[in-house]
Structure formats: structure tokens, C-alpha cells
Amino acid sequence: MHVTKKNNIYSLFEGDVLIAEFNLQKFSRAYAYTNGSVKTPISLNNSIEVGFQLLGLTADWDAIRTEMLNPTAVSTPKIPLPSPPLWSEIVGIMPDYRRYAFEVVMCFMASNKRLENPPWLSIISPSSTGKSFILKLFDHPDVAMMIDDFTDNALASGTPDKDAAEVMSMLDDAEGINLVMNDMSSVFSQKPEKINKFIGSLTTAYGGTFVKYSPGTGAQRHNSATTIIMGMTNRTFKHHRNYMSMLGNRFLFLTLKRPEYIRHRQDKRLYDLNDIRLKTCAFQQKLIKMPDPEFPDDVDDYLYNFVHKTIVMRNIRWITSWNEMEGESRLYQELIELCKTRAKIYDRNVEKEDVDFFKYIAYETIPYMKNISQIYNVINEDCNNKWTKAMFLNAKKLGLLELIDSRKEIYMKGFFECEKTVNDYSWNEEYSEYIEDAMKSVLYSDDGGEVE
Image 1 (cartoon, rainbow, N blue to C red):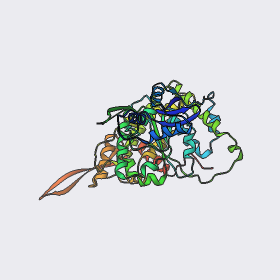
Image 2: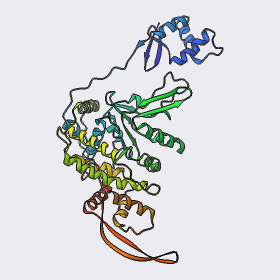
Image 3: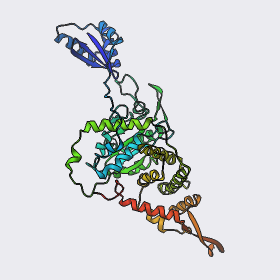
Image 4: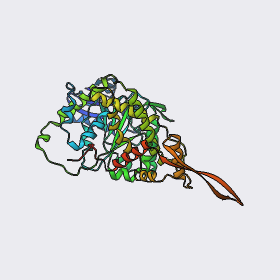
């Protein structure tokens, strides 16, 4: 008789025959019944007793207890990664219309996790457009923790169920790597209050440390130095867009649009999927071990200016209740890390091209793109609409408007006539170009050009 332990689960063997599997808490309750500490047995008592009876033996609970105290540790063998390939070897097998998305996901997967704000990604995709295919190319213990479903509190708080032996957290398990959830439909199909609770835990945990207190377990502290990548269908995202908007810029969003035309090419299908997966993970490991490339001052200025303009757009979601600007620091830091990672892919210093590469990610993250055209056309400060006033307040703070005219007008204030100054503004040339680019992104195809 011997006992093995794997992932806090104990397995009791008699020879090569598996008698039962259980955790420490269940065995303690079963053992307590055999020594008379409790009056009611549990199902594990019968499972072990009957298991030994089938082998013509009698269960020796004291001997089982002795084996439990010295179990044989069993670990899942880790598949070794091959030598890192060239980037062209991996991206070359991707369909043309998915290469942009694959490169974006690689940049998130290989970004630095030891940051205050590691970048997070949410992929919005119709069914059967390659979302899961891309994510599962990173399925390796050194790269990502892949999750298909989880309990309500497992993500951040690690609240145990009644049979759990230890408090575990997905953020703890994914510490320093990537936490990947292929499909969030199961989570977002719950009741609104549960979704709000999930989002609240997620945003709190994002700060790097999450502390959960409960009377049974006390204060549980969890680190969250990880990148979270989640996938969901367009319908799920549309149905729960209000909840997702509560995340602010905790996530950057990428939409995988369905291609207009797909051409079957036999040579693109002749590859071993597992081989490509291991090569993808080996390349990711190579990137995270590389030193950070140089970030030139001109690129830094270019990025910072872009982030300022993007924040005005993202403030649209808040301005009905908040007249202050959303801070740009998180988006700025996230994009810096993503640009550095992309520069590593091509083994060079960061260039403006890398900033432009991630512009569409920032555009996708701006909610309600249709409002951009309204902002572009409405340039009149003398307006009673709170939405317009707040938008102007943010734009003026960032210096994105130019005063083009100033005039005097007479208006009635109670019983008296008063004079006021009315200022007319126009978007400066640089910001007008930004708006035009953002409008183009509505029709943007995720390979950066024409769909084959």
C-alpha cells in the first residue's frame, strides 16, 4: 500500500490498484469516524473499505494515515521546449488575415509582468474565426495558465469550497506568466450582480496585490503580476458591454473580424499543430529573457502625444458623471511595454512603427466609435449639453483645441441684460488627423490591410 500526492490530491494504491482519491480535509473527516471522534461517516469511508474488500483485504486506517503523512510526490512531466525558431517560421504558417492578431497576442504574452500595470487583452471575435486557435498556441506551463471555466471567486479571492484543503487563487497560480481564458461566455452568462462582483474583484486585483478577508480563512493576500487575456464572442460582449465598460482601461480590446474571403491553400495546412505550439512557446520564452531595447526620445514623445489624444476619446464614457480626465499613466505604461516587446521580435530598438502598430488596439478600446464623428463636427463651446461641455473641458486641458474667434453677445440674466464672451474653437491640425485615423479604424481589417 502506498499514497501519492499531486496538486493537493492524494491517491491511495494497493499494489497497482487505485483504491480512492481524496484531499486532506476529506481524509481527516473519514479518519475521525474510524477512531470514534465523530459519529457520522462520509462516502470516503465506504469507498476505502469496499475497495480493500474487493481485493480480499481489510483497510488498516492507521497504516493509511502513516502513508498519508509521507506521500510520494507526483508531478506532471513538463514537455521541454525546442530551440527558439525565427519569427518568420511561426508567423509564416498563419493565414494572412490573422498575422496581425497573432503578433498582438505574442506581444501581450511576452510583455514584462513585473510592472505596476502589465497589459491585459480582451479578444472579441465571432465564432470560428481563430480566437481559440491563436490562444492555444501558447499552451505551455512556462508561458500561460489556460482556463476554460472557474468558480465565482477563483480568479482573485481564492475562496475555497467546503471540501478544499487549501486556499488557492488563479492569480497566484498565474504569477509571472499569463492567465488565459478562452471563452468568458460562461462567466458573463450569470446574473448581473455576480458579473458586477467578478468585475469588481478583477479591477481590484489588477493593482498587483489583492487581499480578501473572511472569518474562516482570515486575510488572504494574492499577487497578480500577470497578464490576463480573455476571449468572448461579439454577442456576449454586446450584451454585457455596460459591465465591460466598468473595467475602464484595465483591458485593451482587439476585435477579430470575419474575413471577406478565405482561399484554401493546401501548403498552409501541412504542418504539425503541436510542433508549431512548442515553437511558439519557445519564441515567447526567448523574448522574455531578452533585455529591453532602447526607447528613443522621439518615439517616447510620439507615444505620449498619442496617449493624450486617446484619453480624450476614452473619457467619453465617463463625462455624464465626471468632468475630470481619466489618467493617461496606465495606458502609457502598457503601450511602452508592448512597443518594447514588438521591437524584441524584430531584434531592434523601438521605432514609431511600433507605436503605429498598436494604435488600432487603442482605437478598439474606445467605446462607442460612432461618437467620434459627433466630436469631430460639434465645435461650439456655447452649448448647454453637459456631454459637449465636459468633452471641451478635457480637450482644452490637453491643448487639443485652437481658439479661432472671440465675440461679445448680450443675453438676459433675470431682469437684467448681461454681456458675455463667446469663444469659438477648432481642433488643431494634429488632432484632426487623429480623428480621421480613428474613423478609418471602424472599417479596419485586423491584418492591417486588404483581406485576401
